[in-house]
Amino acid sequence: MKKIQKGDTVKVIAGKDKGKSGKVKTVTDNKVVVEGVNEVTKHMKPGAGNPQGGIVKHEAAIDVSNVMYVHKGQPARIQFKVEDGKKVRYAKVKGADAEKIK
Image 1 (tube, rainbow, N blue to C red):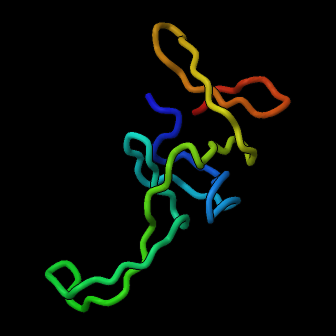
Image 2 (image 1 turned 180 degrees about the vertical axis):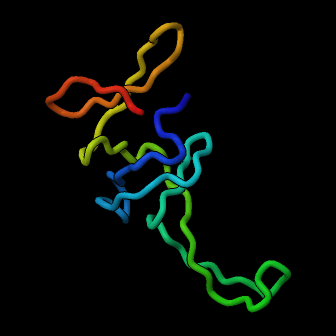
C-alpha cells in the first residue's frame, strides 16, 4: 500500500505549480499524474491515433515527494496503523488526532 493512491486529492507543495491541487490520475513507483497540474505541450505528428497532428497539451508526471494528501480541505501527513492484521491509512492534520481515510 502506498501513501498516495489513485483518486486521492493532493496539493502540490513544491515546483512550478506550487499551491495547485487536483485528483491523482495515475501512480507509479515514485511519480504521480495530477489533473490540471504540470501541463506540458507536445508536438505530435499525424498518425493513426491523432490523424490531424499538431500541438497537444497533457499532464506530465511529478515526483510524489512534491505533493501532499488533502484531508477535509487541509494538507495532511499519511501514517499507517495495523488493525485486525490489515494495514490502514490515517491522515494526520496539524493540531488534530489522526483520522482514518475512507
